[in-house]
Length: 430
Image 1: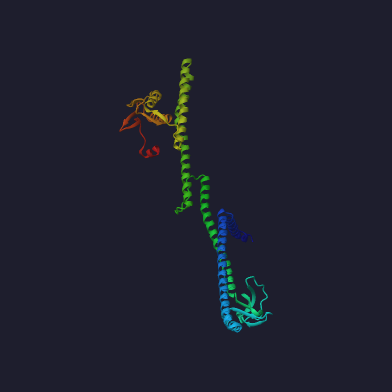
Image 2: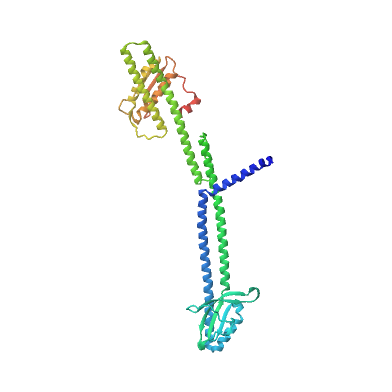
C-alpha cells in the first residue's frame, strides 16, 4: 500500500504543476490582452453578421413587396378591362399556380365571406394605415405544409367587396433562420479561434519571459557570465535580450573596474605607506634633534598629501573608465608636469641607487599645453616610475622624456629593467 502511494506521488506532482501552470497562464497580462482581443473580435463579428442579417432580410422583404405590387397591378388591369368577372378569373388563375408562386389571393364580400382565391377566410390581423397586413396562414400539404406567415395588401372595392393580394414569407423566414444559425456558428468559431490563439500567444510570450527571468536568477545567484539567449528572429524580444546583454556586459566591466581600482589602490599605496612608516620608525629610534624631527614630519606630511592625491587620482581613473564626463578637463602644460615629476621622484630614485635623467625639448607654455586632467596624468607617470624603480637593478637608470615626434607630443618613461613578457602585454595594455 505504501508502494502505491509512492508511485502515485509523481503523477500528483505533475497534476499540481500543470494546475499551477494553467493558473499562471490565465493570470498573465498576455492572456488578459488576448481576452480583450477576443471580446473586440467577437463584437466585430457580431456587428458584421448582424448587418448581413439585416440587409439580407430587408432585401428579401423588398423583393416580396415588389412581387405583391406587380400582382396588384396585373389584377387591377384585368378589373379595369373586364370588370368583376375578369378580376375573379384572374384571381382563380393565379390561385391555381399558387403552390409554385406562393401567392396569396382572396376576394370577399362586404361581410368578408370568401368569393374567390386560395385563402379560406379573411385574416383577423390588424391592417396598417397603408393597407399592409401580416398574418398566419396554412400553406402546402404533407411534409412541406404547415403554418407560415403571410404578407399582403388589402383593398376595398366598390359594392363593399374586399380584395387581399399577398405572398407567404416562407423564403424570408428560411433566410432569417439560416442567417441566424450562421451568425451563432460564426460567432462560436471566432470565439474558439480567438481563445486558442490567445492561449498560444500567451504561452509563447511567457516562454520568452521565463527565459529572461531564469537568466536573471542565475545572474543574481552569482554567475555574471550568463546572458539572455537570442532566437535570431530580430523581434522585440530579441531586441530586449540584446539590450539586457549589453547592460550586463557594462555591469561586468564596471565590476571588473572596481576590482582593478582596488588592486591599483593596494599597489600604489603600499610602497609609499611602507616608506612613511620606515622613515618615522628610524627617526623615532635614531634622532633626538628637534629640527631634524620637524624636517622629517614635514616630509611625511608632504608624502601623506601625495598619497591622498594618488588615492583621488585612482578614483578619478575609475570614473573615467566608467565613462565619467570630461567637465573637469583643463589646460595642462606637459613641460611643467615633467618638471613636477622630476622634482618629486628625483630624490626617491637616488635613494634607490638609480640614475634619473630628464629630457624635455618642449618649452613651457608653448605647444606642450593640452586639455586633460593634471592629477590623472601625474598619477600615470608616477605609476610608470614606481614600476621602473621596483624592477630596476641597483646602478640602473630611469629616463623621463617629453619631445615632439612627427607633429605629436611623445611623453615616455624608460628603464633598463627586464620589461613585460610578450604574452602579458595584451593584459597589461588592456
